[in-house]
Length: 299
Image (cartoon, rainbow, N blue to C red; front, side):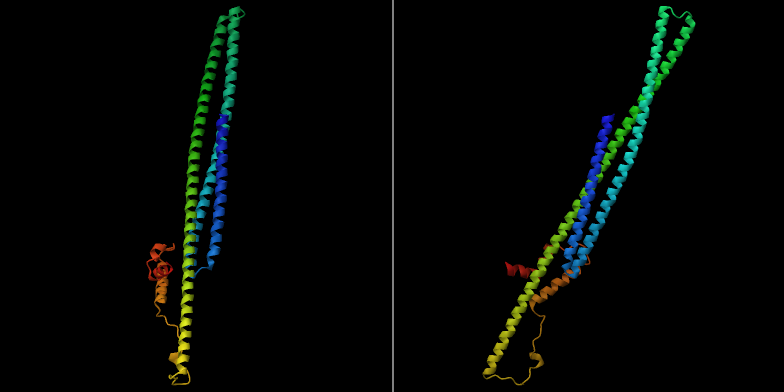
């Protein structure tokens, strides 16, 4: 019985160590999520809202993991109390069994002595000897019955302890498996969010590059127009008025086709942002005219 209890204690100790390791892993995962959240603050306002909602969801899942670990620890404490009570009962039953065995041995010794005295003729009154032997036999029978009951009770307690230990370890393994699965899901969601944010940052960088290129093209076109105007002013064509007219001043027109496609992309992102907490898949954004233009020009 002692090796079985030692085995149960070893397994419970390993379960405690695994639960502590799960607490440390969940804490490290939460710190990683917070660090990623601080890094993502440099994005746009729309991306920051989506990232905040995803991180809040992950934090709630991490809190659920902490609750499950606390429940597992409470069950372990209850199981320790139950095992302690069962060990006390086994100790008492074993003591009773030893006492009963001692009594049976003593009675058997007395019976042997009486039989020896009868055979040697030391006892003269046979009726007294017979009655005493009968009494001793009855007491021996009662003690044997009590010893059998004590042994049955001990076997029942051992069986109950084994069943309780098996159920406890099954529940603990289930809780640990669920916690590991939830942690894996959370880590996968964090990785997907980071990849989506990285893709958005790349798109924004590409858009900024395109806008800078368009601005440079516009400035070059304005310089060429000014040079042509100066060249034509030296020839036959002359300004009718000395001052520049309002219509001749440079204006920023929004009729450029890439600019209109960029505005359409921004409007599409704004419309799908309230509908879901997760960033849209890149496969759904690639057919848009602006991204298709970027892919065509880069290829």
